[in-house]
Image 1 (cartoon, rainbow, N blue to C red):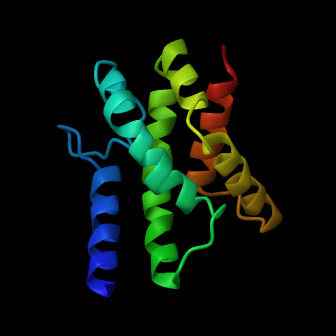
Image 2 (cartoon, helix red, strand yellow):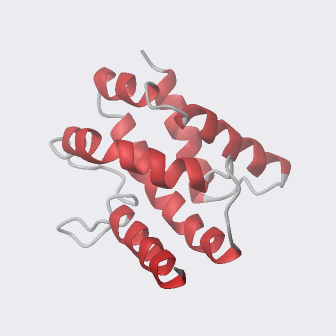
Amino acid sequence: MKRCRRELAQYRREVTALKTEDGRTVADKKEMKEDLKPVILEQCSDAIVHHVVVPGSGIEPLADSESARSNSNVFRNGTGVLRNVSAASVAARKTLRACPRLVDSLVHYLTRAILSNQVDARAVENVVCILRNLSYR
Protein backbone atom coordinates (compact mmCIF):
# COMPACT_ATOMS: atom_id res chain seq x y z
CA MET A 1 0.00 0.00 0.00
CA LYS A 2 2.82 2.40 0.90
CA ARG A 3 4.58 1.61 -2.40
CA CYS A 4 1.40 2.36 -4.30
CA ARG A 5 1.10 5.77 -2.59
CA ARG A 6 4.74 6.60 -3.42
CA GLU A 7 4.19 5.63 -7.06
CA LEU A 8 1.02 7.73 -7.22
CA ALA A 9 2.87 10.73 -5.74
CA GLN A 10 5.68 10.30 -8.31
CA TYR A 11 3.11 10.03 -11.12
CA ARG A 12 1.44 13.27 -9.98
CA ARG A 13 4.80 15.09 -9.90
CA GLU A 14 5.65 13.89 -13.39
CA VAL A 15 2.27 14.71 -14.92
CA THR A 16 2.19 18.25 -13.56
CA ALA A 17 5.81 18.96 -14.46
CA LEU A 18 5.54 18.13 -18.15
CA LYS A 19 8.48 19.45 -20.12
CA THR A 20 8.25 21.62 -23.20
CA GLU A 21 10.66 21.45 -26.11
CA ASP A 22 12.95 24.06 -24.52
CA GLY A 23 13.27 22.02 -21.32
CA ARG A 24 11.11 24.24 -19.09
CA THR A 25 8.07 22.83 -17.37
CA VAL A 26 4.62 23.68 -18.65
CA ALA A 27 3.76 24.97 -15.16
CA ASP A 28 6.71 27.38 -15.04
CA LYS A 29 6.54 28.56 -18.63
CA LYS A 30 5.08 32.06 -18.76
CA GLU A 31 3.84 31.71 -22.31
CA MET A 32 2.38 28.30 -23.05
CA LYS A 33 1.95 27.71 -26.76
CA GLU A 34 -1.56 28.73 -27.73
CA ASP A 35 -2.31 25.51 -29.62
CA LEU A 36 -1.39 23.46 -26.54
CA LYS A 37 -3.85 25.19 -24.19
CA PRO A 38 -7.09 23.73 -25.63
CA VAL A 39 -5.57 20.24 -25.63
CA ILE A 40 -4.55 20.53 -21.98
CA LEU A 41 -7.93 22.01 -21.10
CA GLU A 42 -9.81 19.17 -22.75
CA GLN A 43 -7.59 16.26 -21.76
CA CYS A 44 -5.98 17.23 -18.45
CA SER A 45 -7.88 19.93 -16.59
CA ASP A 46 -10.37 17.59 -14.88
CA ALA A 47 -7.58 15.34 -13.63
CA ILE A 48 -5.50 18.30 -12.44
CA VAL A 49 -8.47 19.81 -10.62
CA HIS A 50 -9.72 16.61 -8.97
CA HIS A 51 -6.44 14.82 -8.27
CA VAL A 52 -4.05 17.72 -7.68
CA VAL A 53 -5.72 21.05 -6.87
CA VAL A 54 -8.60 19.91 -4.65
CA PRO A 55 -6.50 17.59 -2.46
CA GLY A 56 -3.47 19.92 -2.54
CA SER A 57 -5.48 22.93 -1.44
CA GLY A 58 -6.01 21.51 2.02
CA ILE A 59 -9.77 21.60 1.70
CA GLU A 60 -9.69 17.84 2.36
CA PRO A 61 -7.41 16.40 5.08
CA LEU A 62 -4.38 14.41 3.86
CA ALA A 63 -3.56 10.98 5.24
CA ASP A 64 0.14 11.54 5.96
CA SER A 65 2.82 14.22 6.07
CA GLU A 66 4.78 12.66 3.18
CA SER A 67 1.80 13.31 0.91
CA ALA A 68 1.62 16.90 2.14
CA ARG A 69 5.28 17.56 1.30
CA SER A 70 5.11 16.08 -2.18
CA ASN A 71 1.75 17.75 -2.79
CA SER A 72 3.20 21.25 -2.38
CA ASN A 73 5.28 20.88 -5.56
CA VAL A 74 2.50 19.05 -7.37
CA PHE A 75 0.02 21.75 -6.31
CA ARG A 76 2.35 24.51 -7.53
CA ASN A 77 2.82 22.75 -10.88
CA GLY A 78 -0.88 21.96 -11.27
CA THR A 79 -1.94 25.52 -10.52
CA GLY A 80 0.74 26.74 -12.93
CA VAL A 81 -0.81 24.69 -15.71
CA LEU A 82 -4.32 25.91 -14.85
CA ARG A 83 -3.03 29.49 -14.69
CA ASN A 84 -1.82 29.24 -18.28
CA VAL A 85 -4.94 27.45 -19.49
CA SER A 86 -7.29 29.89 -17.73
CA ALA A 87 -5.80 32.74 -19.75
CA ALA A 88 -6.53 31.02 -23.07
CA SER A 89 -10.08 32.04 -23.91
CA VAL A 90 -13.58 32.79 -22.71
CA ALA A 91 -14.49 29.14 -23.37
CA ALA A 92 -11.54 27.92 -21.28
CA ARG A 93 -12.57 30.10 -18.36
CA LYS A 94 -16.18 28.91 -18.65
CA THR A 95 -15.02 25.28 -18.63
CA LEU A 96 -12.82 25.81 -15.58
CA ARG A 97 -15.54 27.72 -13.71
CA ALA A 98 -17.77 24.67 -14.19
CA CYS A 99 -15.25 22.31 -12.54
CA PRO A 100 -16.74 21.22 -9.21
CA ARG A 101 -14.83 22.47 -6.16
CA LEU A 102 -12.13 24.30 -8.15
CA VAL A 103 -12.98 27.83 -7.01
CA ASP A 104 -13.75 26.67 -3.44
CA SER A 105 -10.39 24.89 -3.26
CA LEU A 106 -8.47 27.88 -4.61
CA VAL A 107 -10.17 30.26 -2.18
CA HIS A 108 -9.51 27.84 0.70
CA TYR A 109 -5.81 27.61 -0.21
CA LEU A 110 -5.51 31.38 -0.52
CA THR A 111 -7.26 31.94 2.82
CA ARG A 112 -4.90 29.48 4.55
CA ALA A 113 -1.88 31.18 2.98
CA ILE A 114 -3.04 34.61 4.16
CA LEU A 115 -3.80 33.40 7.70
CA SER A 116 -0.38 31.74 7.98
CA ASN A 117 1.36 34.77 6.40
CA GLN A 118 2.82 32.63 3.60
CA VAL A 119 1.74 34.71 0.66
CA ASP A 120 5.14 35.04 -1.01
CA ALA A 121 5.03 31.72 -2.85
CA ARG A 122 4.66 30.71 -6.47
CA ALA A 123 1.57 28.61 -5.72
CA VAL A 124 -0.15 31.63 -4.14
CA GLU A 125 0.70 33.70 -7.22
CA ASN A 126 -0.75 30.96 -9.43
CA VAL A 127 -3.95 30.77 -7.37
CA VAL A 128 -4.48 34.54 -7.42
CA CYS A 129 -3.92 34.63 -11.19
CA ILE A 130 -6.34 31.75 -11.79
CA LEU A 131 -9.02 33.46 -9.71
CA ARG A 132 -8.40 36.73 -11.53
CA ASN A 133 -8.57 34.99 -14.92
CA LEU A 134 -11.78 33.18 -13.97
CA SER A 135 -13.36 36.51 -13.02
CA TYR A 136 -13.07 37.72 -16.63
CA ARG A 137 -16.06 37.17 -18.88
